[in-house]
Amino acid sequence: MTCVVSPASFCGLSSPISAGTGIQSKKQFLFGSIEMLIKLVPGNSAGTVTAYYLSSKGTKHDEIDFEFLGNVSGQPYIIHTNIYTLGNGSREQQFYPWFDPTADFHNYTIHWNPNQIVWFIDGLPIRAFPNYENMGFPYPNKQGMRVYSSLWNADNWATRGGLEKIDWNSAPFVARLRHFRPRACKWNGPISIIQCASSSLANWWNSPVYSKLSYAQAGQMKWVRDNYMIYDYCKDTKRFNGQMPPECSKQPF
Image 1 (cartoon, rainbow, N blue to C red):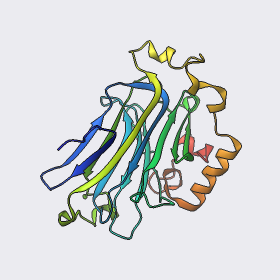
Image 2 (tube, rainbow, N blue to C red):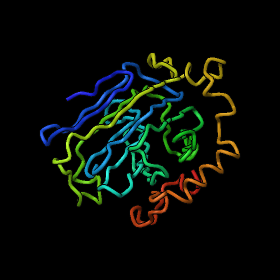
Image 3 (cartoon, rainbow, N blue to C red):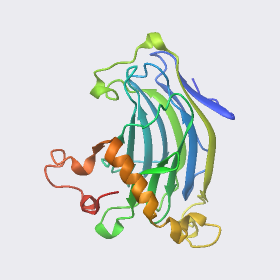
Image 4 (cartoon, rainbow, N blue to C red):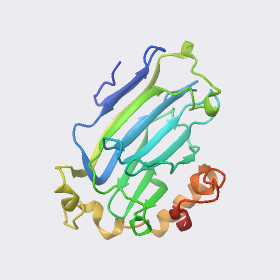
């Protein structure tokens, strides 16, 4: 089973034998804006995960995630975000959508530059992660990443911690993707670490206006987080035994 790459691409999951299906970009990128229009699996999507993310290779990989955790009919999807640097993740934040992500296509954009990473949905920022290298936390700025999208069977954990399994009688499960638009710096090896971070006119994503959220964007993000955020690792004191990650002192982000 494969994803068909076309003006209206799709990913499908049809049976327990099909563990999943996915696509990846031919090119690797370092910094820029990566956007995709996605229409998620409708109906009973429990146990499925549709993923859209950037990732490098290896055990010390960097990664920036959008994952969409399916649910039983009538219950909302969960929008799961995370960031990995040098193979270390555990920076999850989750949201309910304020719309039906299965009824139409919505724009999911990752904007990434040397100063911050911002996750956008239909132009609204839902999360921003600034560069915290000065606090000892690595930032993804030295590895090129490809863009990936996949749909796979994750019913051992995705819905209510694995309590809700995939109903294969509802197969095939199909997510639709279109308008993949990478306005980003092409990775050409280590030289790109300098080239893609330079402040040249071609590197528009590095201009000062993108170094931090505007006042209006900060207000939009606060609205999303106040009304639709359901999990923030920086609030999970039990998980970290009270020793919270250092960047949590810089909330909100």
